Length: 235
Image 1 (cartoon, rainbow, N blue to C red):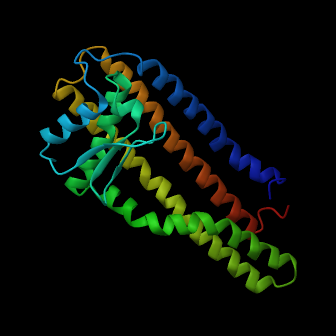
Image 2 (cartoon, rainbow, N blue to C red):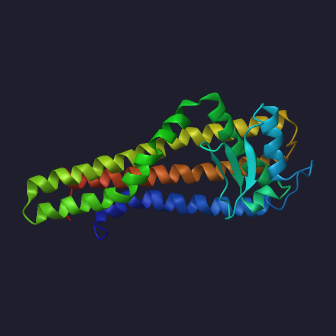
Image 3 (cartoon, helix red, strand yellow):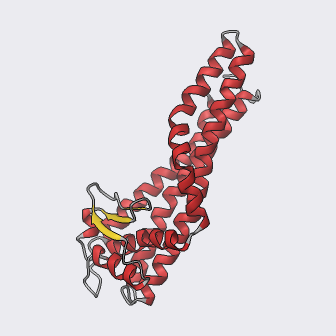
């Protein structure tokens, strides 16, 4: 599989885009993580202020460990921020905290793409782990002589992986919308003023590209599986 030219042709765009996006995230976070906001409030306070302004008093804000491990948990209605965001009064921290608050607002408003993504989580976790093994097992059976059963087993692997691909595609509008909400609220609530918005845009836009890269990589891998099964390549 990994020696196939077709595999690398389809994998390289997502790989290159992912490396570029990750470098942008790190460089922008390092830069704007050192720039204090004029209001000088931590990411935790930004999140709390924005949640309260939207009437989301029941959503808790907690600190969690791990670099850029920030996320919103819709099951427990908790917004968890990494130490670098939770404790720091920086432009980067304000942007990331507001973005995660945007997910809490999506949840409260019943934003359809977020609901769909949440529904897909169990199947995605199952499929993304087992799909490659099922596909390669079925593909191997074809070469060993059990063509019919191997063919259909391989397609089961493709179907399971397709669920994971749908998840990455649905994630795009969810993340873009959360950033859009974050930027608007930061300005309307007076938390970010003037040129500080430039830093917020760069941090959140860089993060958005990581999701684009993940989607491109997933689609490329799915195409490779399909082309192998349909005779696009027999390497």
